[in-house]
Length: 289
Length: 189
Image 1 (tube, rainbow over the protein chains, first blue to last red):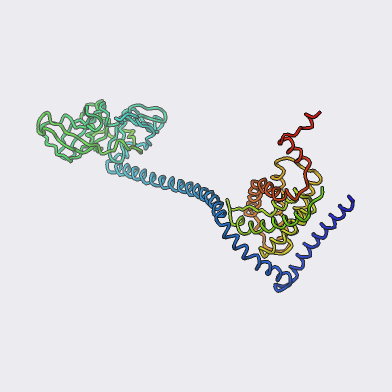
Image 2 (image 1 turned 45 degrees about the vertical axis):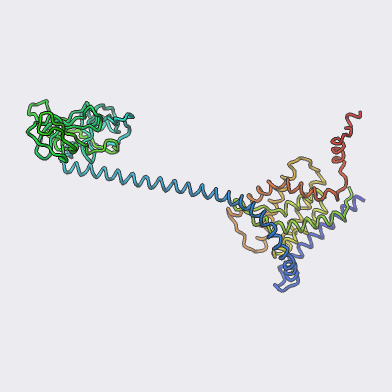
């Protein structure tokens, strides 16, 4: 009984296998108009309407599952596009940064050429830190005594005077900005030659003033103010700043023509957006004109 | 175990037709991450696991041939592969009688992998173009994974459809006795 069952199973299996192989062989051997192809077409023609009806009936289910698939696919696509977008944005930002840095470096180059500052051995530096206070009176730069920077060296950017080096380490320095009330800069009005001291007043970083201007000088709003350089002929009293570096422009004058006249300046350099600066490491002829 | 061939026959025929229609009309058209499920090897393997090697082989042959006719593909390819799958699953049941809950999943995944590889090999041997490369590998692995996920529900569904035509399983009878208040052999002793 058991043997018969095994024999029957093997026989059936062999018959099915033979049938499959025979079907394959016949199907491959015959032309498109052959018997098996015709049967297949007949079955297909019967099957097609059923398939069509089933397709219509099953459309909601298909749409539901398709929605899941589409959502997953869309999510993958979204991630891909977000990644691509982030990549492009990073490149655009990098390009924009490069353009801005280029403009700043170009400004510095122009200032060096026009002001004859190349002899002052300028050292370019990048601002790597900033005072967290609202006063923004100091910044940290990435060059220090290893680049021959010393305390007191003037610091400029493409727009004009920025400040002076107040602390130096091997590879970094702290620059006190002209918005710090501690800094006093010998200055003169470019048109007219009135000489005084540029210093930030008690009103804060925006309160840059030109002080000690003799009353005989009439200073008009809009006039440019530059560093005066060394005025004294006495050795040891040289100014730290070479002459002719732009500081700012006169915004208003209160009580003009009096000893108490107050001349307000707006710095040319945007002290809140400093990125690239130059430190002038060597005085030129004692910073005399 | 004796099978009620009459009842089982028409149930298997119905499962065969419904599966092929459902596969062609719906399942093949739903792609998730570029792959879709393939119910045919799952159903062939499930039938083999439930009813044994001989009905499994016959069912595999029939569903494969119907698929070949429905899709107007080379007649004999799918029937050969599904015949092997149905027979192998049935033999597994007859020789090992695996009882773990995960068995349908493993058998389904193996059946799908065998079907995918078998189709690729046969297609290649018949001289047709096979898209070799990562796409093929991704399609194969994706379908295996997809089918592994749905293998257990498909198996349970097929078993439910065939249950009435199957002879009473002593294990099933015992379980039912406990749940309906019958005494376990341990409590009797």
